[in-house]
Image 1 (spheres, helix red, strand yellow):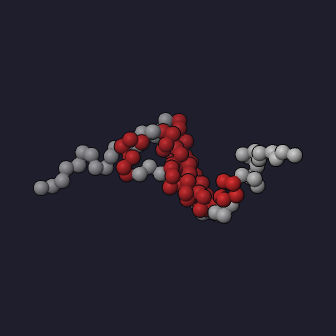
Image 2: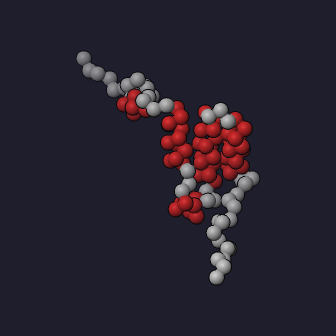
Image 3: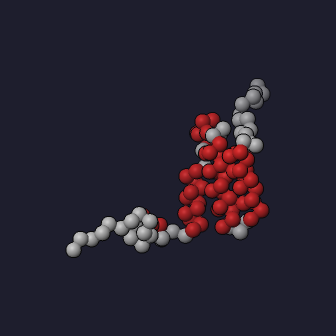
Length: 102
């Protein structure tokens, strides 16, 4: 008798899914927010990347929704939509164009 290999969608048999079961939904969402957040070192490279910005905003919206902050979540979802449909764009870098006083 041969054993069948579990399908990746089988949550009970998938080792990755089993490992993730030990984390709360909030912990998983926070990890997603951290993974998708644009860091200061990547700001110039990704500030105009519409998909990256939409992912960042959508993940944050999910976190806010889980924290029972629907108004803030809606604002982030609207920003994500704006990035995807092109109705918003990146603001200028706050450090550019400013000269220090001597």
